Every structure is written in structure tokens, then in C-alpha cells.
Image 1: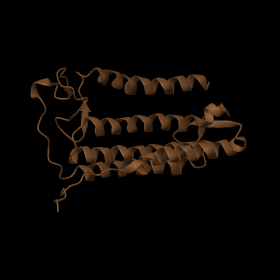
Image 2: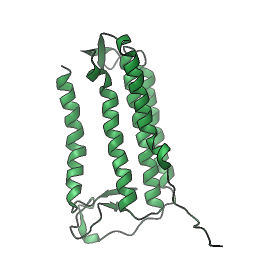
Image 3: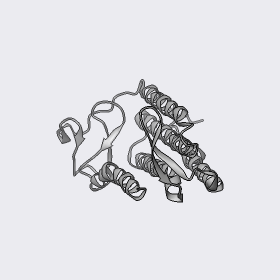
Length: 218
């Protein structure tokens, strides 16, 4: 009888990974069914008192915008999970990082549904959504700290390839993801051709989509 591994790597399974997309899909189905019941003018901005001070005409695009942004973020997080599973050796650090990314996707899906609910109710659900967002951020940070506890620090990868102690640049290293020099999780190997494209996609692409959406909603 072969001895089993004392620390088998955790795997979420397809149903659990599909959960955030199922949540967004259910919200999209609700939106399609109740679209005509939404206010003629949808609030998209609130002042510090919680009073709506920015509105747009009801349309499929404006109503579905929170869900669309949530879908983009969840796809990015899912892509990171796939990249880590395929390109990083199994171990405690990879397992903990995958858990945090999955929890982050669920958090994103619920918050975007909450934003839709706040808009659909003309802001009546805004305060509960804000409390949900705040509690979710605290819970996500606590979960990340819990998942990272007791994980042995991995050896520093090619010390000469680190720039400013934060950026790993090694064109000879085929890995896209490498363990961070300090702290928890992984960072890009910016010597990899895909790293710059992915970074631009996150840092420029997502804000650009939001900016274009804001222009289209004017």
C-alpha cells in the first residue's frame, strides 16, 4: 500500500471555480426579467451623505455595467489561477494563493451584484452594500493572512534579477510567475514577454474600459 502525501494539494474543482460566474449570470437573468421595472433614471454616483447626485438613462448597457465590470475582474482572476496551476510548481504557497484568488472572485461577484441592487432600488440598498463591501475587504484580508500562516518562505529566485527589491526581470527564466521576494504570493517575471502585456491589461485596460463606459453613459 503506497503512502499518501501528507499535504495533498487543494483543488477547488470546476463547480467552485464557476461559482462567481454563476452568481453574475443569475444577476444578469434577474436583470433581463425585471429590466422594465427599473427606474427610468438610474443612479450611478452618490455623495458622502449617500444621496444620489449622478444619473443616467435606463438602458441595457447602463444597467448591466456593474455586472460587466465584475465579469472582467473575475476573468482576470480566473486567468491568474490557470496561470499559477500551469506554470508554478505545487506547494503550500501556490495553494494559499489560489484560495485567495478564488475568494476574491466571489467577493467581486457579490459586490457587483450589490452595486446593481443599489442602482435598481434608487440607492435604498446603498448602505447595506457599502457595509458588505467594507466587511468583505476586512474578511478577505483576514482570510489571506490565515491562508498564508505557517507557509515556509521559498528560496529567493536569482537574487541578481531583482530590481528595486520588487521587480523580477530575468529573460533567461521561462517562468511567468515567481514567488515574491518578501511577503505572500507571486509576482510577474518582467523578463517574460507576456508579463508586460498582462500588466498593461490590468493597469491600463480595466481603467480604460471604465473611462470609456463613463463617456458612453454621459
